[in-house]
Amino acid sequence: MDARRDYGLIELSLTKKSEWVLAGATLQLHRLPGNPDLLREFHRDSGVAFQSYTAWRELEECFLSAAPDVALQCVQQRGFLEYRNPDAKVSVFVVDDGAERSEWPGHGEVWSIALG
Image (cartoon, helix red, strand yellow):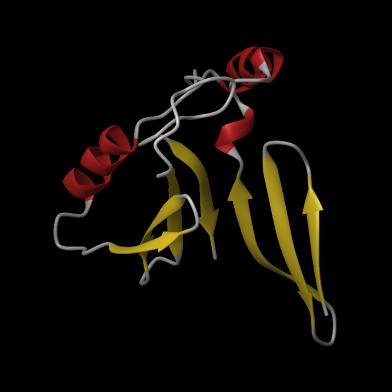
């Protein structure tokens, strides 16, 4: 049995074996542009300022400089590219449908980051 709990910016995936266990978490970054209050609140509470949109190339450069020996797998998935580090069980979903940025991330921008 599986379940998902959506808390806005974070979505949790749970699985039940003998008891409920966290199977993964997803940072729903595509929700940031439509919620400037969330950005301000997060900055106020954490001191970390997020941008409304994140280009995959910027994130990729940071990742590769931190872990230059790690090869990312890339898989196309209906309008997205999934860049996955199988050892760390982290995936970054990037918009790949040619769309321009609007209230949602556009082509080449990060949609979400999945852990697990």
